[in-house]
Image (tube, rainbow, N blue to C red):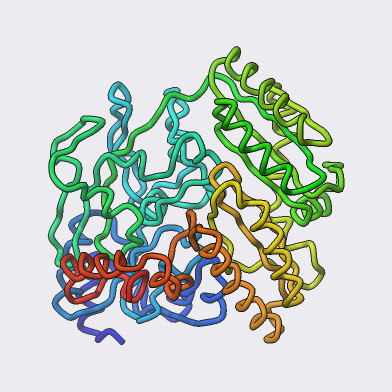
Length: 467
């Protein structure tokens, strides 16, 4: 527990109204979306909401002096126990640092604070004809700082890449309270090879190396048109082959999503007006660009899919496009309602495998569910092999919880067996730390050395990723 003297010092730093030591307020920060956080009560000793970099510098100097753990946190939408104070200490809520600091659109970039919400950033950019391409499902809640900390991506990663592809530079407060700027102190350039790529070091570091206080971000012009191809398949293998053949045909969808039979059933139960066929898989190919280019790509993707699918449809009509996307957009919420008295839990939910092995992974995930008597709804970004398995359990049933944990373990080990990774976009956190030795090998030891070099007292998000 923190002493009353230290709490008083921090209250003077950030203001009485931005520092919370009451049990109820602290309890609100004890959870994210992960099952493990729900089963444990890792309550921080203190929650602070800094409003500027100088406040963060002062807090980190104090924390470093007294070896107080500090966990930076955005919106708390994470799914891997990556921003939970499981060793106590301070949770630093960055949500009040949420401004766009500078538009530099003639140079395809903006400078923002880490607390800005993804959807709100894109709404502001859209007024100028630009957008930030990564497209996480939690767009209306997640913050840029969290996206950078976990290198988030989403549906459009197959064409546009992940968050790291758009981070040009960062202002970071180190565990000692020192401040660095990566990517060039005054740079407005879109690329640089001056020195080590420290920007990339902090992207995906899950709050273990420093606290991001400003981001120089690359943005792109909004595509003029969007189109969508929807294809239904009587067997999973055919859906995988269709994706491979689309790529071999030199076509470049902006997103390729898959729903297996379990996800289709969940979507229909949640929204019966969808009227989807009972098939093993459903693929959605999004294309974007100029109107002629969208029509060309969509028509050719449809032709490829006709060789494998039982039914294919494409459209560039905005209203119909929204109708066809509906099944994918509701499946996350729908999954939790497929079984009465149960809910979706996040465990083993983020594996990524080679594209050609996606059908095999989908079948084996269902087999794992059957083995333990756990219903699993599966969908994901087949364009880059990223699958989201959603176990559905009664969280008041200790037996189901234990079986769900075994399901998560087998899904993670399946990913490694299939030459993939235990996490494609949600991060390591606490939930996947046990698999890092096997997945990373000697590289893990190098990461530990980097952590020790930047945070020798191990006060920033201790225990996450590496320990």
